[in-house]
Image 1 (cartoon, rainbow, N blue to C red):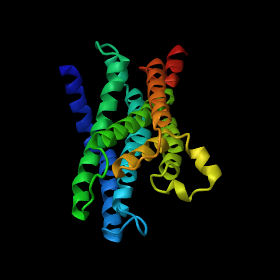
Image 2 (image 1 turned 90 degrees about the vertical axis):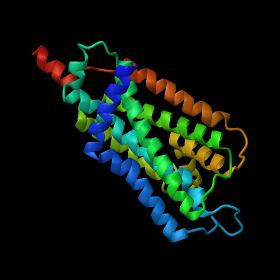
Image 3 (image 1 turned 180 degrees about the horizontal axis):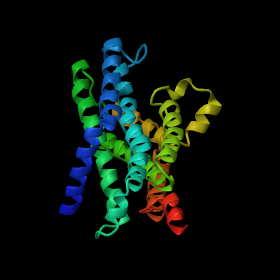
Image 4 (image 1 turned 30 degrees about the vertical axis):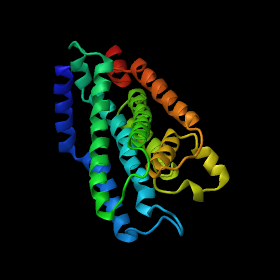
Length: 256
């Protein structure tokens, strides 16, 4: 366990120095929320609503960090460690793929947690308050985060190099960011589009996060929870199975 936290601390220091995730997972959601606060203030979400626009948007803005860390940060981090031969060096140490992936996953969980904490503090400036169950909201937040980040882990494993990981990350990140309800409300989309984006685990998670934050009951949440748990379990297992210490290209060059 000491080895785990030592490696995690080192990875966090290097990541913070790089600043990419600090900007996209922590600062960007905070800036967006502040802009929304300046524009909407304490206005209701719609005429007659008993909750404000900011309260309605809190779950969506907090999901930006989940999307950025899971679908942009993790794929590039895992493929980057392989391309820089760091994994090759770790291979001769008593660590397993589960250990390496666990550290990387934990690092981006920290980013998501910091983002959620800073958003919660800033939200108090506009009187935003949790209208539902804190436990239910944190549970939905954690499940959404794990299911999304498991996809990122798998993407980083199957990518041949950081260039391919960047392409895969972009293909995953932008559609989910735009169409999952994080930036564009699902309610304004055509019915056909709503059915398509409903397969995204982030869409399912964001819907539950929004409802648990506002204390809205929408019937059974068993199916969305099962979808997210299934995605998280499947992608995590596949990520461990497809884990490689060295790149395909480098292996081929060695054979030649």
